[in-house]
Image (cartoon, rainbow, N blue to C red; front, side, top):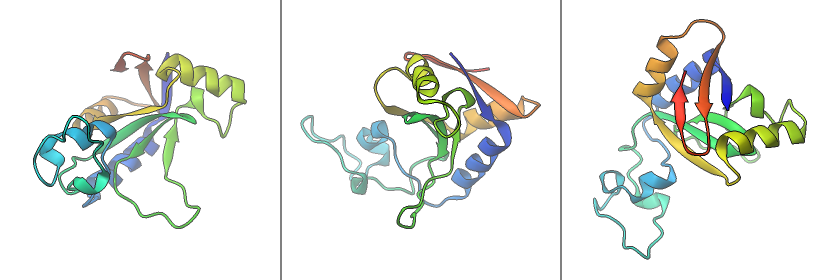
Length: 150
């Protein structure tokens, strides 16, 4: 499925990530020794915790999330006030704030699969994706098994 994102919104999210001194890890980064304070691979039966990660080592980038819609957000570590929400750029086709439930839910499942999840996208990849584009929107081809920047 092709998902459409607002280009300027993504540029702002990317700038926030790059300017941050601390960033939040995605699940796979919790297991990567290069980001861990102890520099070791966690035990096979252990579930790593975010406080075992050095947030200064996490590289800048965006996180693609599929849960209540499909959206991109900065990986900058932000302390939110109670009830506060992260700044997210929803895919136009999977935006629960603007579309009927059946429409965004179907788009989320066709593009991201039935399970919730997240994928980290490195700063340089997003920067190249945005740099080569003109116009208000950029497109991402996403299936439950692959991601391609158009």
